[in-house]
Length: 146
Image (tube, rainbow, N blue to C red; front, side, top):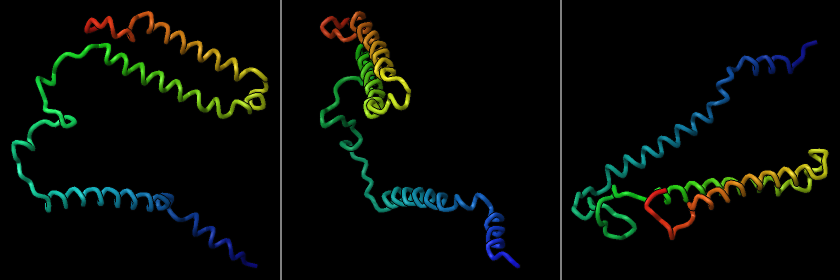
């Protein structure tokens, strides 16, 4: 007695594994081809006039003044980095808040998740008080650098 499913299984196993990635490869090729086609079409069809007004620097509709390589206060970069740091820390709070009610079942302890977040927020507050003590957020006393 012959099993009809057996030849089908053998044929499926002999198919090379990388053929499964053919649709992904075709999609990548289509995306790259579409992008290259749009850039080439714009280059071939578009009008290219190099006028003085097109070659000027443009910054939000404001006429550029002075040199772009001027000195910036280090405080500017510090505040930008602190914003990113605290923003990422807030992102870590969201998953915890979503599963807070389920944490006792997950951890086996009733207050483990709560105290875990208290410790985390303690570290955040230590960092926040440190930057306050250093005067990074005190713009009135800007000396040009720290």
